Length: 87
Image 1 (cartoon, rainbow, N blue to C red):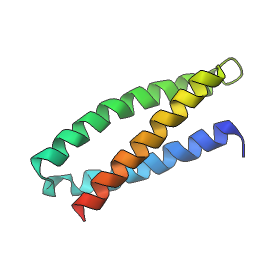
Image 2 (tube, rainbow, N blue to C red):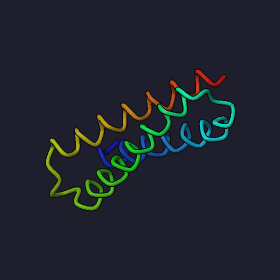
Image 3 (cartoon, rainbow, N blue to C red):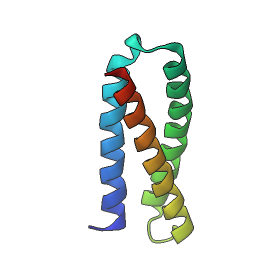
Image 4 (spheres, rainbow, N blue to C red):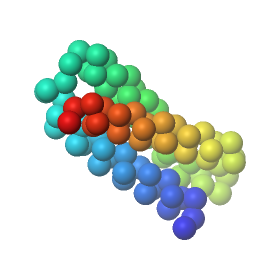
């Protein structure tokens, strides 16, 4: 699997976790809502970074790709945490 495919798959998994968490947000306590708001800001940063890396895949530095991947993994963990707390 290429690095681009890995990032795309990560993005799709994040979207799935995000969508599931959004459905349950109306049940959330205020502290979870604050965490959600922070993750949404990070989501926007991730999408911008991902779009840049995917668009300029050949020119993107290894550091830029690694940064996008790390941010994606952090987002995935954050959305997983919210999902677990809402169950």
